[in-house]
Image: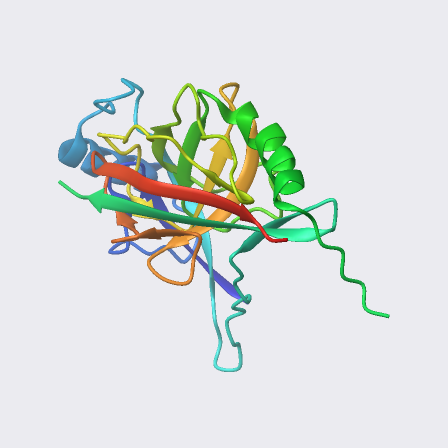
Length: 96
Length: 133
């Protein structure tokens, strides 16, 4: 399966406009780090930590490759192999 | 003969209290990427998106085989931009105890949007653990 590479920044997310056929060189990586710095600054407002930035590898599906999608169950655990434990929660995301 | 053990509500309550009361002052974290095999499997490439705080009494006493979370303090400023796919309950010492799926449908933690942007406010209004009889 072929691979391509993206750069991901903590604040920016995946920089999808810059796919790489090979892992980005130091110069390419630095250029995108600079771009993200211009967009988001250096540090997270809450933690005060410098944003992380990293290269991620992505497998490219060929014509005959079908994505594997596992079945999902709301049962998350089984106590002592006896009976299932289920979890149900509700949350809210308010993007700014 | 069928293998069908059944437990009383009082018995289930004992187990739920023993397990989930260890989460007092713990955390409820939301991640992207693939949910690990189990809570004992270390996190790899997954990224922390939001970090919420459980109460000093994280869950009310179990009743009828269910354990309901006390108020969970929202994360007013999400840690990273990404797509929420799973969440985890952690002790105050950051040890993962229970992982669960997250998303917008057919998941344990149902969010209005799985897409979390950095600095977003992320809240959880309800969380109930239920052990079947």
